[in-house]
Image 1: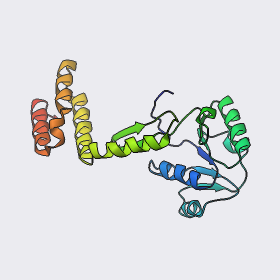
Image 2 (image 1 turned 135 degrees about the vertical axis):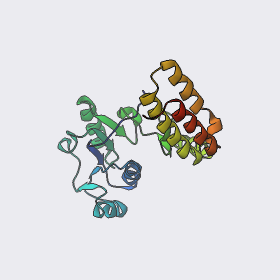
Image 3 (image 1 turned 90 degrees about the vertical axis):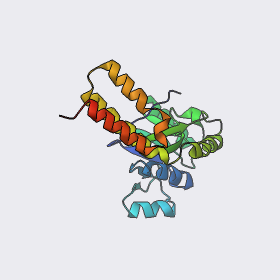
Length: 206
């Protein structure tokens, strides 16, 4: 498996299945503002409520290839193992990204456990060996990478954008960027302010 982050904005995401596992996948997608299409003859009450709030789009039917052919990412979580396997084979044949919840080897993509702190995103995967362990590791990392990182990453992003715009020398860019990434700034917002003052003084925004 090759780790990669993908922008799913304006991409069609289809979840085949309408039970508790589908609900878990939906909740994960909603963290990223993604509205998925749900294909299932039976729908979990919580998914019904999400549909009423226009958070998902329901298709009350058994899954067919016509439901998946224009999807970018497909998640197969129905109770019908044969249908899951059949759809996975077709989807991969047509170059789709496929998550097979029960048997990872039948798909070609996996959803890792994710920790998000503002712009910081840490993904943990065990390659399907133990999703529970992935979540345990993610939970352990939550204490190490706490809420302080949200403001710190905003600081790093803003300074990087400023440096790219105003510092022409690649050597000087590296010096300023390396200095900003010093973890000393994580716990000292006043030092971040001092850094920005020094940067803007050396390279004013004319």
